[in-house]
Length: 126
Image (tube, rainbow, N blue to C red; front, top):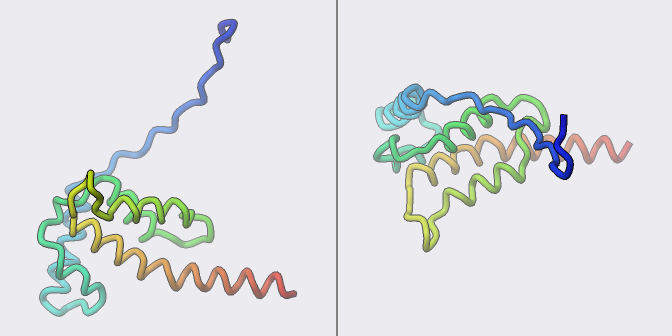
C-alpha cells in the first residue's frame, strides 16, 4: 500500500558479506608465492607490503575479476570506476596495495576484453 504523495522505494539488494580474513590470506599467499619464486606472474605483488591495506571494495572486485567467465559478468565502466578509486588524489593517500592489485586485475581483464571485442567485430562483419 502506498501513502498518497509518497513514492515507494525500490528494494535494496543486500550484498553478500565478504570474509576479509580469507581474502587477506589468499592475497598474502599469492604475495609469498611471487616472493619465493613459485609464481612468476604478478610481479606487482612484490610491491605489496601489507595486504591489510586492501579494502572490502578490493575484495569484491577481485572476486568478480577472478570469477569472470561470461561477457557482461563485469561491466568495463564499473571496473574503470573501481580502478580510478585506487589512484591517490589530494583527498586520498597513496595505497600501494590497492594500486598493485588493480594492476593485476587489468592484466587479467585486458586479453579477455580484447577477445570479446574481436568476437563482436567478427560477428558484426558477418
